[in-house]
Image (tube, rainbow, N blue to C red; front, side, top):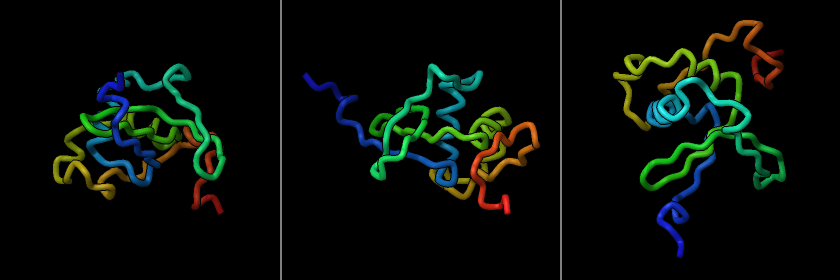
Length: 112
């Protein structure tokens, strides 16, 4: 009794690997942003706790790691910003400019 949904490929996506296609799916599924009810918590292969939101395509279930960068990027989403990129281009989605109010102490490489 396995449904097709149970046989989907599962992919964990960090903000650095976010593509225009996945971003568009996130904005479509969570037009007002995500909240605690939408967040899935699990342990990864390194036994670290990961928080993510889920979007699904026909063949893949994406678990996109929750972050301030993701939230700000979703809030400022404009599909025209990505029209010159391929849907699967991980270079298309750039780090947003975070204000001190946005940055809630997330680990960023450029803090030091």
